[in-house]
Length: 374
Image (tube, rainbow, N blue to C red; front, side, top):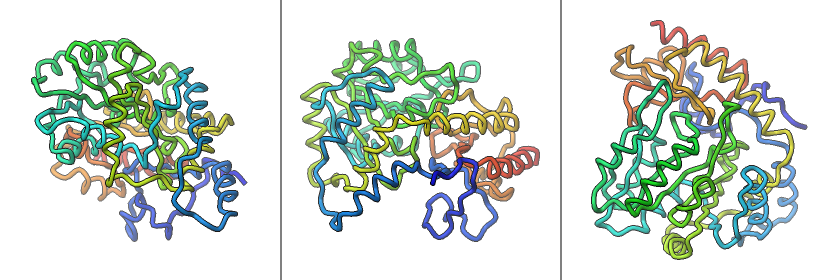
């Protein structure tokens, strides 16, 4: 039976990363990107059907998973992707690092910040220099600063990494923004890696997710786009991701990075993602209704501190005026577990995950109000 999105679910005893961080403390967790909503019924039905077979061995990626993903891209974005463009992975983060490993050791990568913290580890993981280029805040919206990116570019720079929708600022880049980025990529002979994992989580009804290889096809051969169902359907414990790589030579180099390092995807992960990619129900529309209502409630408390949010369930909140030496400690003292902006590359901000039942959020917002007033 489906569990309503407003039902509070006790996650104690499940080894939840999100909740175990504050075990035995009166702290509500709004940090890691993990929703407190039950995963949809059709995922469990698919898993139960697979578990009727008693062996969970090494598993070849089923053709039905690829077909489901192709259908999902066509359904949501009218993007018809050939099977050979698709590479299956155990997660988006391995895909980011595999992309960097396709470069030579004397080359460098460029990453606009603030950004999801595993991006900031790519350079060290791959032995490459990384150039961090700050996003610019214009009328409450975070935008790529193409001019500054050009100023910081070096002869060795060969690859740019972005998140679209952007994490943690919540931007869904427009066609004009992606076109400007594409022109920069083309003019400087670069490759572009895009993490599109939050692509279904559009909060602003006027916003839209645009996969860059589809929106600006002129640079499709320069792109690696990474997708997964795990955020939208809250199945991060069954990680499975797809890289869409139109260029055959780049795709071969990318796949070559898997050997000996990247494990295969497990059978239950395949099954869960396939069920999600085949979904045409009202589950996502209902989720978005809940998230949009939560976003409005959060905005009523955070006010002008909160950046304009197009997508994701992660709010980016400016708390620089509080002049705190330890952001996490301050908010924890008010019963809130948040993500310190420092780990995303920008101090004085917090990231707040509002994907939870109304009762949990309302208690969290009361604590947030107190923490901002104190």
